[in-house]
Length: 308
Ligand code: NAP
Image (cartoon, rainbow, N blue to C red; front, side, top):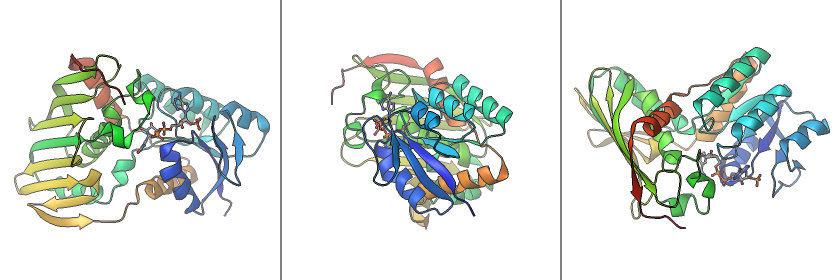
C-alpha cells in the first residue's frame, strides 16, 4: 500500500501536539512536507509558503491545514486547485460561504474535503449518542469554561475578526451536541460579551430550543480559573446523562458508564484515509452554523478590555 503523502500547513500548537504524532502513528500517511513561516520538522521538507511547495513539484497527495481559520479558505483553494485532498482543522473556515465554496470545488474536482471536528472522536461521544437515541431529551445544559491564558497563550488571532473568541473552544461543544442530540435545535436568544479592545466574545450565554421545545442552555467563559469545565448535561425521561472532559467520559445518573483513551486525532486521520480511499468528502457545517447564528442573533455587550 502506497502511503498518502501529506503536507502539514501551519506549524503551531495543534500541529505539534496532535497532528504530527497522529500522522507518525498511522502507516497510511507519510509526512512529506511542512509549510510554516517560522519553523520546520527534522527530516521533513520545509517550505515557507504553500505556493512554494506546490511550485516545487515535490509529490504530495493531501494537505492538512492547521492554521487559524482566517487564512484557511485561501490555502484550501490553492491546494484543491492543485489537485490535493484537504483536511480542514476546526472551524472549517472563517465564514459558511467559504466552506460551501470549498465543498463545491472539491466535488467538481473529485477530491476529498474533510471538515474535522476532533471532539466528535472523543471516547464517550458515540456511546452518548446511542444512549440518547433511545430516550426523550427534556433539557440540556452545556458549560464550556476554560482559561484562555492557560490554553491559548499569546494566540492573538483568536481575538481578531473571524477568530471566534470563546467560540474557538465552544465550537467543540457544539460539534458534540449536534452529533449526540437526537433532534435539531435552534438559537432563540443570546448574549455575547466582547472585550472593549477586542473583536470576538470572551463570554457568552445562549438559549436554544430543540424541535420538540426542550431548552438547551449554553454558558461559555474564557476567563475561568480553578476547575475547568467542558461538560454537557442532558435530562431525559429515563435519567440524566453527563458528558465530561470534552466528551471523554460518560456518566448516567452519576455513575461512570464509559471512558476511553484519547484517540481524537488518530480518529480524524483514520476518517481522512477512509474518505480518500472511498473518493468521498465529509463537510458538516452544523457547529459553525450555530456559531454564525449566535453572531447574527445575540445581543452584544462591551466587556472589560482583555490583555494577556
Ligand atoms: P497556533 O498555535 O497559533 O498555530 C497556528 C499556526 O498557523 C501558527 O503557528 C502559524 O504557523 C500558522 N499561521 C498561518 N497563518 C497565520 C495567521 N494569519 N495568524 C496566525 N498563525 C498563522 O494555533 P493552534 O492552537 O495550533 O490552532 C490552529 C487551529 O487549530 C485553530 O483553528 C484551532 O481552533 C484549531 N485547534 C486548536 C486546538 C488547541 O488545543 N490549540 C485544538 C484543536 C483545534 P507558522 O508560523 O508555522 O506559519
